[in-house]
Image 1 (spheres, rainbow, N blue to C red):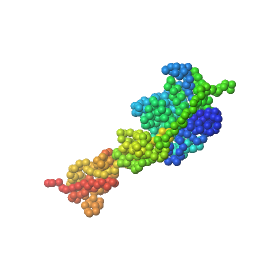
Image 2: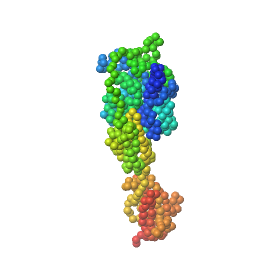
Image 3: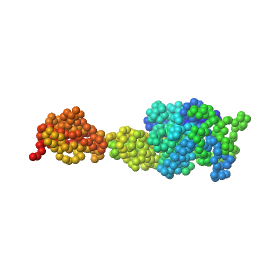
Image 4: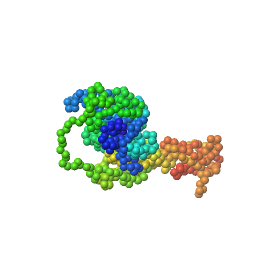
Length: 561
């Protein structure tokens, strides 16, 4: 969020309307952002409606949008190999630089066609958080304190009601952008990735944030080696031409050369206190005026020119001939407008099984008609090991001619409980849908003996063999299944028998009913069974809560002479 840029524009704008429009375009770059699916607001998530005051970005919200010193002793075009400038601005904190390069390498192996350059991440990281506040991160790459944007409460910014219960941003009323790459919580739920293999997805960790930002920039079929696709990617982060120009400027600057500096020593605006609070910003060149020439060893100017120094002026340009045709406008029939549920049923499955229902959505254009060839990203979100076919948690597909697309089959893992499946479409104004899903534990449908030995004993002795059983669900053993073992009568309505074989309780007293639980793989060996002095044939019944039943024959007879 360009607090600094906002104040600069207010000084130079000729009308309040112009200033407000420019600030609104940059005021919530805490992108990438997807609207909350329950929100009725149609505000762009990357723009505010009014001009924020000087206190709009305070506390944990230092945003720096000063343009880099792009003029070097080697003017553009004089050399194809421009040297490292030597400017302090070219120094990127070690952990932050490592995270950008690691993200580039990761995307090169998982999405090589995207061709993500790490310098693009560096440019966005510079604009969004001043390279994680100049590299104030710990040994794992996590910021020393959370980086939070202002509350998106509709007062100068987009209105986005809370989507994460305050889990990421500490705000249970409205969302705030989080971390060095400034993710909206609902978007982090879809795109958040563990970039440092610590088992967590933390938007305040530079490794996680950089890889997640890279995945977001590479959405769909983008090839970032193409200027048009790179521009689309940056605009999907914040749909503002001023933002695009600023990021582009830093991108070109970092491509000319950078160097590593220790964490915590990165360059912030000279008036920044270093405590995470933005004070009055240092002036910097306007986005539409080329920056002043800067020596390779000198950082950008941090003090305004003397009052006697005239302001820089645009070079005289020859008059241009106005276009003979009006500029082209997007065709509403080909522009993405909305995303809707196309008949997704209840998403539930038993552990280890495939879901019978699949997520199906439909994209529509701005006229409300089905829109084909629209990229939709499906993601499994939450604490679950459920995955799409091929073990993937995120899949991007394209809608057909009828505007619809169906996600791959989901297969439940072993972890039970609730989670969500999201569908996100659109780049400049993303739309998101969220579907509830759940995995239930296996419930044994069969209980059987593990052997078929005959069970006999002489009166007054114990049975030599123990009864072993296994509870299963469709042939797979089910651990922790509650079973009841009862010695029953052979009456038409069986009841607990008061004679014949019995178990012993902890005190050694006879009992004819036991409540037990199966162990690993559904296996259980019953305690020893004893015979009283009454000969005969008896029945042991074993049942589960789900209704599976097993009967075992027990014989008490004197041994043959």
